[in-house]
Length: 365
Image 1 (cartoon, helix red, strand yellow):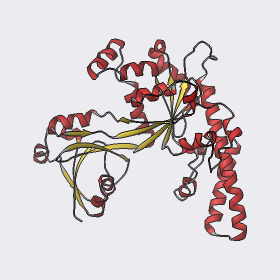
Image 2: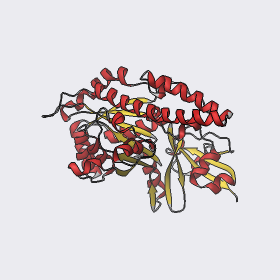
Image 3: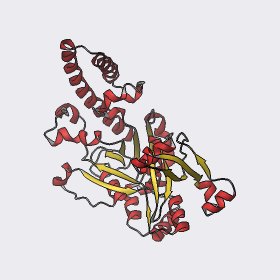
């Protein structure tokens, strides 16, 4: 399951956006500010809805994203707490909760409000980036110091390779550059996996705009995109308060509400699509006796690997995959017509699954 951590400075609207995404009720007030909230959201996919309409199965199972909402942080938190690897206090655990996530959704306040400083989303983004860099620096420096002592006593090629990697990483961090900015090979990733550096994680920066500025979303993004977007950092926009209103309506009322406002699609749908694009994810579908289902995989997975996502036995005993893409299936409305027209194909284990593939796996164990 895809896991995304919501982060941002206090009063940015992060928790309101979390509630709109997940429907999870959260408490407001001083006591709740140190809580971590976890909620799940279905990945909207009109293709799955269409398959359900065609096959009329008892269940249509959407892919799921898990969102983690941690309390807002302030500049200097990383230096004050140190974010020790063996966390014992809430301050130590704060960024630890984000480290368990596949990506970060960084909410940036783009509206003014009484009692708050004028909105400065670029400055807020840079402040958060500095916190992540400092936190990574503290953790990697501690690891490097321990590794150096261990290597002096028992030198190994693995320890030497890890030490050299940490030197490269710390060189970038000392220059206030995120780890996303350096080139890492496949052999480097296992070393860093245990530390899950925050400045290495893909980020979706979301401008939280006021309802009055919804029409200016594109303009605001165009102005800030050159200064925020970079390797593995994408920019999007949403109005958290408006999305909360839409989330509380039934589908027909929500569509009417958005039509009245001239909104083509919910910002939440756009955030999901942007998250998939950011992480290089795609969806494929299966049709079983009792359900149609969407599955999330990383782009470029083979048919055999995709079978393992459904069930390990399918990967182990993989024989072949019967595949038709939704774009070919939709105008024909059934597998028989797809076979007749030659758009349903048999593929072996090395076939690379495409977004929108409808797959029937054949296997034997």
